[in-house]
Length: 147
Length: 103
Image 1 (cartoon, rainbow over the protein chains, first blue to last red):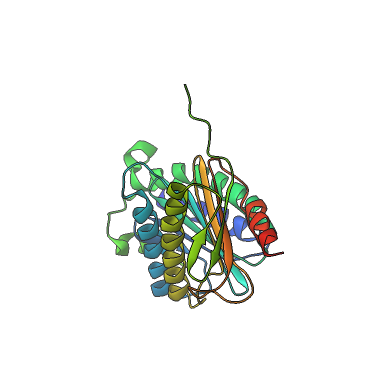
Image 2 (tube, chains in turn brown, orange):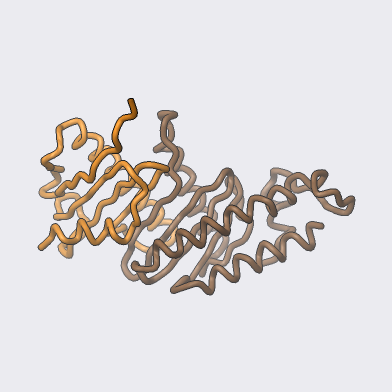
């Protein structure tokens, strides 16, 4: 099952990568990288993921706020981050005017992703004995998804 | 009775100060979020070697806040503007709205 789920997840992400002026994507679950399609090595991508989670944690630390997305503009590139449950999606893109379209597409992707990620994390619910559960260690998660 | 959503509030950044026609509570709230957003944007930029952000937006279910520096730079004393509103507003529209304040 994992063998069929993860390529599905990856191909969905690949399709999103072809939307608009996207030049990089990162999908994370908790503090672990699920799929890194950023033009950066994993250690940088992981640092970015952690930074985004820390940012969300900062704003929600009072308990009455929940950041759903961040959007930052840098010299020549924009970074759009969306949170959905324990999943984080970071999109690098170059055209500012595409941000709201990308936000909408990414939100749909994340909605769909919940089912795939849930099936990976809770294989017993997927009803397939050959599914291998992912542990909470980063090594197991990254091993299942080839970059 | 339901509280009406926060209407669009605009802020200017100049000489390291946040100013607005909004009341002081809102100015303080914007200043706190702006500083946090700018800080974490800078950290993200550092992680990806992109430098400091010239604009940043955060969005919650019923709240959107942003800032943008004008062309002079992204330092603490450089001019810029920001906005916050009690609804989920398109990011690009809000960015254009505060860029208009430069004119």
